[in-house]
Length: 175
Image (cartoon, rainbow, N blue to C red):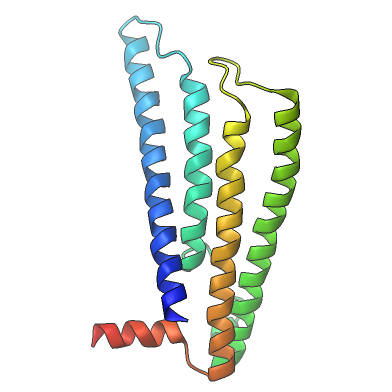
């Protein structure tokens, strides 16, 4: 279990770093455009197109890390008070629901991607192929679903053994 989890954690962390870099690029492009416009210039042609693409990449490259690091917003509905194995069952079911949601996003995104590709749509300002905007969504949705399945596997092992393999490995590393 731990080699799979470590590989998933490592790959999701790298995807999140790329996503954070995309956010930085979006911010820099926007700031540069504002400064140029304030100085009396015409701004940067395609800032909106580039920023939108970078924000799509940011969102869908960071979602997988949210799953694997268990850092999504959560509401405790009393699960923390349940017995340990029942907590694991609830967390496993929640991870499976997350995987299904991300697969649904990927499935419906794929259908829309095909429509956009068929029509040959392009962005308004600099004519980027609109399919480019769908690549981060599709890749990120599938990757996030995989990360959610790894989390579900973790909780399934916890349910069956009564011991969280990730927490146990981290405790062993800390010692």
